[in-house]
Image (cartoon, rainbow, N blue to C red; front, side):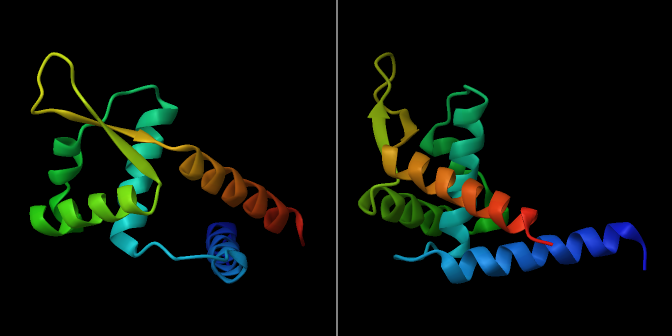
Length: 116
């Protein structure tokens, strides 16, 4: 079997392990994908707006995405900040909870990857 296949299977096993050891309220797939986009933008020091996420048609309709953004805000993963120049624009900022969530995921993934 090629090394690529084995690497991907190991990756899938890591994801499965992370899911089993991650306590607390689970994010659904759409919420997770939206939060991933927010965190990637934050990591790249890029601004991300609610409107940017609402254009992710592959994840659902605008109504669905808007609802998931509200869920992320209600669960404390993101906060919204109104743009000073244009009040119609809302910036999405990850909270300490989101940063902590990704730190824990990183530590768990590193731990799992070090296990033979």
